[in-house]
Length: 252
Image (cartoon, rainbow, N blue to C red; front, side, top):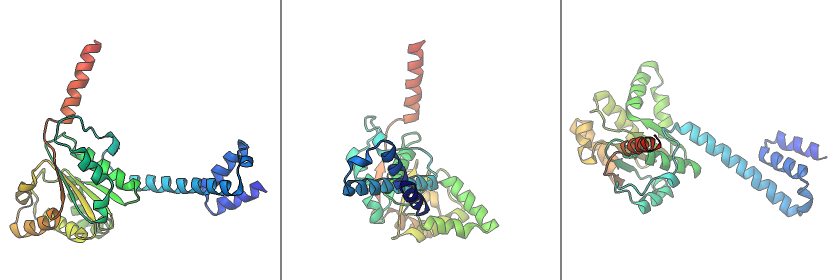
């Protein structure tokens, strides 16, 4: 009868229940459960199974640059990183409110890691997230205009609860990139959230975008009511490299 029950569970794709039921039978723990306890255990196992599948799917689809976690962010290194501010962002209420986050600072200071950590946190809470590196994004979308995939790419970005645009402003935008950025931001404004990371201070983004009218329109939609995180200090990568070198010398 148990085999027949498990076959039905598999047919209904209740894989979490199947595994939990099999484990309980093999360990004889099922006999110690009341009917209510057994049902609760099976439902919890199925819930966990589906949650983990969805989380793994969300993380895979996000295509993060880093495997990052809010719990692993280093708050000890001096870079004007407010722990309470990050923890408030980590509840992802800003996504529900359709607000943006702007993270600026010098190269290697941890902007991309923090953005990815917030992205992973959003995935764990069930939000759809997509990570994009600015240069690669514009190159791909320009190619998309030529091969007919542009609309599909733009539509995909529009549907994300959170879009991470990393390393914005490394190079000034050309006319085509400005138009693409305007379309992305216009589609998302007031509907979804976007995280920008940049080595360039927000005050200079107008120059990066160029063409005053379009720059004004884009920045008005990005900056208004955005949460800002301005990191200052030495490169984390540089410090890590020095530390590794010192440790190697001590060993030798």
